[in-house]
Image 1: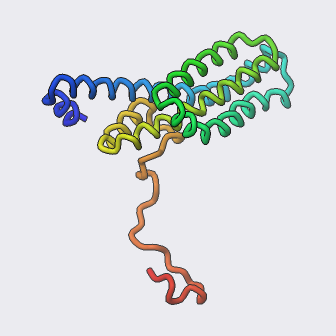
Image 2: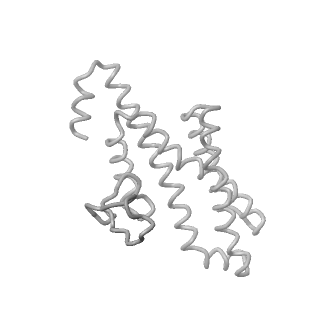
Image 3: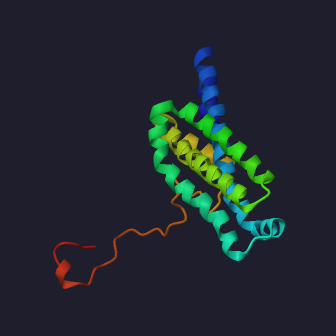
Length: 189
């Protein structure tokens, strides 16, 4: 990263300014992704407090997480379409604003209906934040390793965030030997 910053400082002022804007923008995107990831974890650990505050049954309590996750699963593939339609910058800014407003709505919810509506909105817009960060990495391949390092530094080495890091996988040098006669001559180790 030091080499990248040194390179940016030796470039003409316009290139250095663009480089700083790129890093600030990507850092802001990583913070947004962190908000979406933390939201899932914070709510999961607060379910008993939420149930007590809204007097919810166990079956109602399950829908708080389920509604968020279902909306997130729907939003992730739509992110590509919305990015093409509005640009990565505008899609991410709108998703961040909507996610923040939905979070405030969740905090102010007085009933399970209101909470679930805001959780669906949170899940949908939070679901757009996560793939947008990965999109930014892939549209700037010359900065791939540096951007992944920044994302890793901001998000932390949590079990959720292992993209680009295979150090947790076992290291093997050869494929395991297959002992099935049907594979003789096809696979060898």
